[in-house]
Length: 336
Picture 1 (spheres, rainbow, N blue to C red):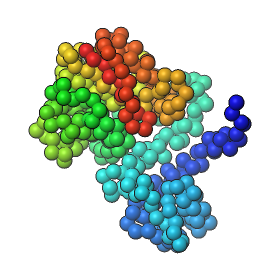
Picture 2: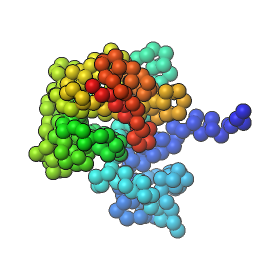
Picture 3: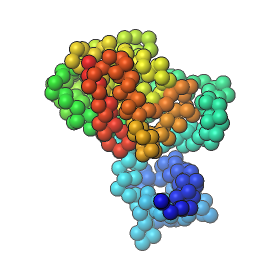
Picture 4: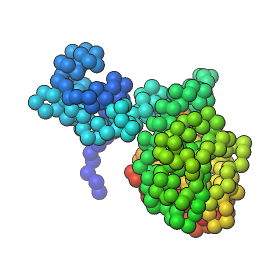
């Protein structure tokens, strides 16, 4: 039997302190500043506008959290924060942390209410506008959001481009494509694949810019539409990355059925998320993401590989399997 551990309880229970320290550092653009050149306490405090009472504790807390290095009184980014949290780099993923800071952090304060009511705790709770409809109505905000989605999905997208048996197919459609990184990585790694990105019309300019920047405009194109209102484009392979968890069970099954209709005979459906392990005891990120769906959506939830396999079987797929990608992400594949 495991020995009782108070330190583990306290680490989890006060984890919001470390989280907000990182989120504030991103908000202050600390890592972008240090990527220009390392700085000492006084210089960095002045450039960021930090009060002298708190500046040293704030920066040294980030050192203790392994998010900064400090050598002879000078602060430096770590390799990770330099790569992923410098706004000037294409590898920047801080956009999702910016959203977490501005929206998710305060809304998660109402998790207890969500657990008792089953209701979202975001802007919609008090009759505010749908945050995602509002996002899609503001092109620059949408561009930043979709870039952030690319940042957190890029590793899994590259893994799918390598791991899946693309040599058997010639066409693929990415449903809910966002900036288009998934179909882009597939096309880059597999020159024989022609691809389609399917998403709402507002996404088109952002998708087309990204595809063109990767030299794929001749092989990858955008099809506008809502996957609720229109059939999915026909292809050998249909992909859905971080899509199904937004929706309730009936909507999940409907989208899988639409995918089955769109896939050519012998083709496949590839679904990927932070798939929860079948014992529901290991993938903490996937389980916490499911709670985030409670906060953000009327009926969304994350799911296990076995859940998804069952839904695929019900839709008529065969030979389903689950494959790990990177980090908490896995893909579920079903063949038609």
